[in-house]
Length: 378
Image (tube, rainbow, N blue to C red):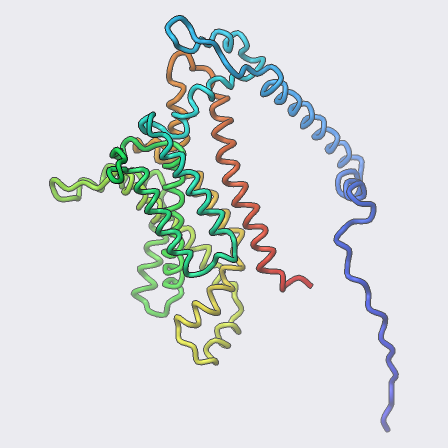
């Protein structure tokens, strides 16, 4: 005997609201003031933040000194800044030393060239970040832009005076090391990550050896080896530029760390994706390039960008081999007696430059992740 059961489905519930009831005040009450302990901690931290923010504004803007007069010898007279020490900032040091901080020992009359280089790098980043430009022609744009950058920095053609790499410094060096380092390290990382998952024992062993060896030593050790030890193994009379050696060390170091991030994305991908690609009869490189890698890289966008940001800041370590990057140029700019004691203003300025680049990368990665994973939102 069959039994018929009538089932009336319940009405569909509305999707959960992304905005908490009560708006921002409701969120504050629910998360920051939801108990006596939380309320006390919140009020204490708010008091400290407001107090130190007011103190910083007072030091950095209200009582700050922006210019200093020159003495009878035409040199900056920092007596006014020294009398104001501890009360307000002396931003006159930035006005006096900003060219050296940004461009290092590059010839003063040629500073327009590294300035254009910095603008070209930023424009290249912006164009590369726009998805509508993600076409094969973008490679040609990179090649053309980097060629122009090389011509501007070196010179020696088109009527430009030649400037050896020993004179390069400041922000262009930081952008060159970070851009070339990550641009070459990322493809290397993908190949190493694929090699670590290879079924060929020789390839897998070489990739594992490379990753574990590089990740087992600090970047300073690699830079020291590239600068001091590597030239000892070269034939007599042969010399490789110090900047190039540092660049190779950074590429190898970044490639090892990025390889582990990419491998994590490959392992996080469901096995069904591999099986579906095999069922379609795709070759290894077709399966990897069209199905596996796009999904794997999408999963690891946050750790990838976190690694990018870390290596952008790690370029400052090249100071140990005598390369004038942005931070090294900033430290050197205050060795003159009249400007000693005003390091805080210089470091705040340099820190702000680093923050702008790192914050831009962070915000872009968050937007890219949200856009690429929009289909996952239910």
